[in-house]
Image (cartoon, rainbow, N blue to C red):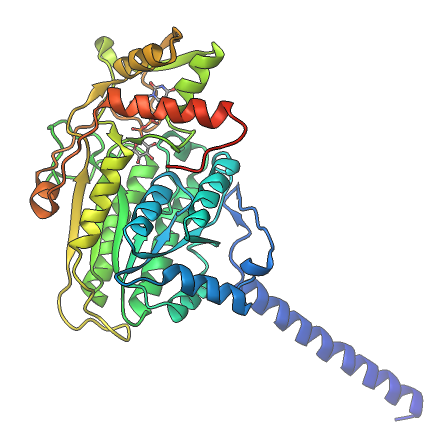
Length: 411
Ligand SMILES: O=C(O)[C@H]1O[C@H](OP(=O)(O)OP(=O)(O)OC[C@H]2O[C@@H](n3ccc(=O)[nH]c3=O)[C@H](O)[C@@H]2O)[C@H](O)[C@@H](O)[C@@H]1O
């Protein structure tokens, strides 16, 4: 080989190996990074030194937030409606709490940020991250020996499932499996309490709904993913000895609530003088919900957590049978949606522009009604806030939050 050809050969070799090396690096990076987009939902990322997961300050914040004399709890969906209330209640009673939330754009992110700020003012660190990010979950379980996980991160909403089915699979199925995988490998394995839904009762007509009733006729993809979650929970309990408690929440409402829910956007639209759509069934039958106030749901979550037994596995192997439970958490007194609107009209002192429409075939069910005797027996659960009182508290919060620029830092 002459000098020139030898030189060209060396350059070609160098380019080849550099490209291969860079390609491999890129591939590894892509494999390890969490999805940047949650099936069409934007996940906004913010960079800050305390949020950089490799920094010692970040680890310190995680450990500090988890520190407690009692339980150390990971709360997923901590910047969400139920998640923020549960995190605050746990911290207030002295548990160590670390929050996790992906801050996706399903509804107003600024409301999630405001909840995060309140939590952080109360000593709860809310990490920005996705439950599908298994590296992050592993890291968290390496840093903290969590005794419990309260898993509330989910894609919620019944009707949105027809618009964005992928986001339900991403969060409620893939995300749940990713979380269970991390829990089963953790040492010690935490006990898990997670949010299922009243929607699993689907088209059932026998009321009130009992945990013993069939749940094999879901009316929405949302309901189907929650039902799937209950079956997946069975598997992880059976194979790995994870202690798992599923909570079927019944239409939770209250201060710091979800803007996609009817009571919330009815309030907004009534105040703006905009018409609201009121669904009704055939023969003018009104649609009814067992609306449950947030504080009652928080009590139920804490009751379930305090009665959860330890998981039994270690090193990914089950030692003996572990606890597997499902509870209804409802108010046990269904109210027609028309009545909810009348209460709101009185509280807001504005007449609603009612637009009555047939119940669309998009996943909604006619009514829900919880039998809560099992939760009552196991941890003394009893809802104590009726819809009138609960909506009063919601409206007070709503007017305060949206009309006063200097927001109050209280729950
Ligand atoms: O209990 C549950 O499992 C579910 O409760 C709610 O679902 P839903 O009861 O459908 O709550 P909303 O979307 O707030 O609807 C409440 C009622 O208002 C009715 N509605 C809703 C929207 C509307 O424009 N008009 C109307 O009459 C619905 O048909 C329903 O009866 C939550 O959105 C779900 O995430 C949760 O899992």
